[in-house]
Structure formats: C-alpha cells, structure tokens
Image: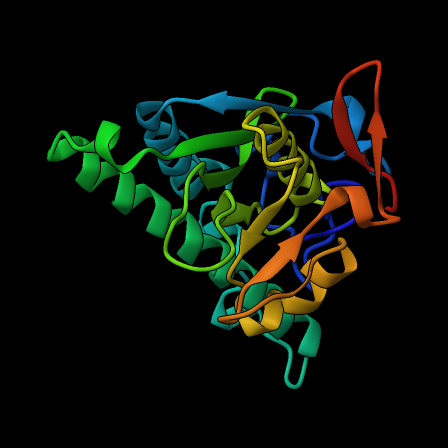
Length: 226
C-alpha cells in the first residue's frame, strides 16, 4: 500500500464531520516531505500490539471511511477510498490478532518475527511484520509478511520497506527480501523494484535495482525513486 508524499487530507466528497485532529495532530498541513515528518523504528511484539490497536481505534477509526449516507451515486473515488481503508484495516487487524495470540500463548520468541512501526509526528500510522528466516522455498530470504499503512498516508510504506531491506543487509542477505503480494498490490511492489520469483513470490535485490542506492558511509540502502 503505497501513496506518495503526505496524508491525503481530502477524503472524497465529504469531510465536514471528520475532525482530523482526533487522529493526528497537524494533519492538515499538505505537501509535506515524508522523510522529514516520518519516523520508522523497530518495536517489540507488545508494542506492535498496542500500535495496531491504536491505529484501528483512533488514528484510522471508522470516521475515516465514507459512510453510506455520504455516498454520491456513482462516485468511484469514494469507492476506491473505502476499498483502501478496508484493505489497510484488514491487515492491521491480521497483525494485531496474530501478535495477540502469540503473546497469549507465550510463543512470540518462538516465531522469530520482527516489527517495524511508522510514526507521523509521533503518531503511529503503519506497521511491517518481518520474518528474518525462511526455509520453505528456494528463496531462502527474509520475508515481509505483512505491510499496512494508514489509508490517507503517503510514502509511509516505502520507508518501512527501506528498514526491511536494511535489516536484511544486517543479517547478511545483501538487502534481499521477498514477499507474497495480493494481486491488487503487485504493481506497486514492482514499481518499487521487486521482480517475479517462483511460487508467486516477488523478490527485491536492491543491489541490482536502479530504484535503490547504497550509501557506503551509512552502510545502508535508500529508495531513490518517489
């Protein structure tokens, strides 16, 4: 789920009843630089649980969705907005429930998953679930299991992906990662430099992609095509 530079503060057709300040402070400022206002950090499983809960109940509550009373007949933009909302919410919910079950069963250390969270001016707006190890197919690479961002955020997903790439680099995999995309998100990942692998996976090799640049001084990769 990738957008482009800021929170989309113009929800289709009707926004009068929605006070964005309830979700994110200073959200009304448009045309911002994502790298200036966005912070990405690795978080624990318990933090990931709290973050996804906060996003679902506060940061991206149902007020962000166009209700049936707001719909304009044949308004495709409203339908696209709600589809984007539903897709993001579903993934946040999947991550939340998965972590909750693992913590409840005290098996979080056994599943060996890492989490990266995105914050817009300190407010959580995205989550990425990362599996450092994978031995079930010929691409024995770290895997992005889930990635979701606020329905109105832009460039958040790619910043989370940068952290996954650089975690892979730290683990000795040269920054390579893989993921299994939903069909409707496949093009977005390909635009980021992923290419088709076997078994339906997409694989990113940043060293062989013109969309990524390695910085020797920082020993890290950066996505360079916005």
